[in-house]
Image 1 (tube, rainbow, N blue to C red):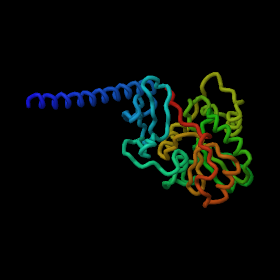
Image 2: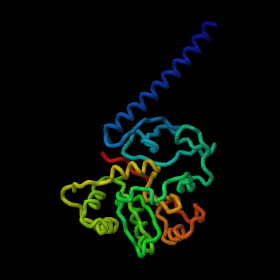
Image 3: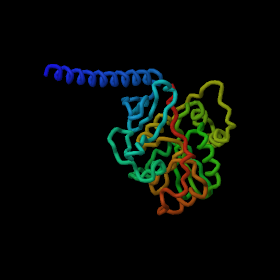
Image 4: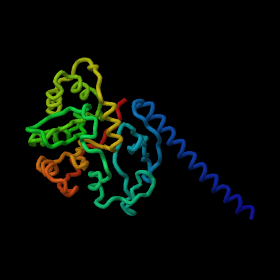
Length: 269
């Protein structure tokens, strides 16, 4: 019987050693990310069911990274397609019907455009501007530029652009600190805005915009917020946007192309 006791003890020790090793790996990854990106508030790291893939938590947002190349992150949900469980949080929540498509539309209550700090946005009025639309955008994002071309086809709408420096602050700062922000924004989205030799300095809302995006769980750009509280991610076509502005009963999954959305890139040092 002693051999059985020894065997059980050995098994327990191996299990504890494995847990300790996992905890050490997570601690090392967390320390490395905090050192590399001190401006980003990484709260914790945890292993995922995918070998070599870790979850990094920043408030309510989660990103997935490999310690072998932490330059790149993937934002979104991690779903076990066999069990259809959302394992992003480790809570084993059932994945929403519709798979990745369903993640594009928020269904929980969120603020209406008028409840947001609109002074922190660049406001563009088209026509009478009676309809309201909020866009969370990164001027360095290719899909945001694609969306901007669609937005310019709309009429009778006021658009509030909240700048998110997901791919660096240089371009957003150049826009916000410009004498004419609307013109600078249009030039930036067209790819013709020349950056100044030295980074401009002016009071800006970029940190507040990031905090707002985190609170609303905006995980990619572009993300649109409509007057009825519906939030949709992706470069929608002008006809889709116009229909959503005109009707509050439109099916939330109508005409969304999942490929027309850019995930949040790695935080900048």
